[in-house]
Length: 169
Ligand code: FEO
Image (cartoon, rainbow, N blue to C red; front, side, top):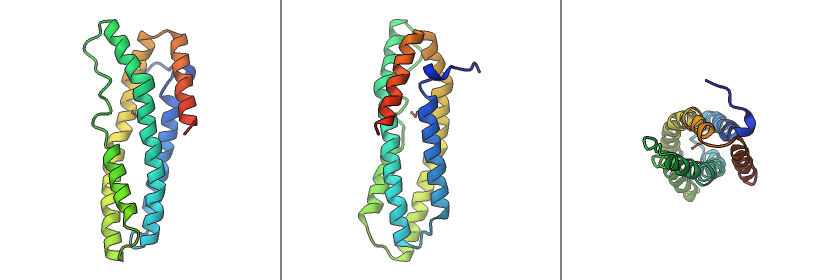
């Protein structure tokens, strides 16, 4: 694939951060003792913060990148690509609900804590296995479309705004 200069690559830096978050939560869940209700609560609080950030990432993409791309494709009469619903199957909402349910029960028996931990791990694995290819799709399909249908200077502005919004989190 053609290398896209970083200053017009709207996904590269935010996705580095998202991949860092994935790596961190994967490592943390691996070393968490689910039989400990205290350890589970600590994991859940970190996951809560993580998923707030992931959700913001998705909103920033929707509001700053994908709507603009969809509009531009429409005005260039490219009718065979739909970009605006690329987050419609996102499991972020379900993950956040599960995490919040977990946080709401502050103390659990070790059996209950273990059972919740296993459920959480499964849900997180499912999430990760769709989130990583989703980011790849954005980089490999949407980024080239952006380069094709936007001016270099337009993309520079979009990229800068995307970075500023992420840094404000
Ligand atoms: Fe960049 Fe839609 O995750």
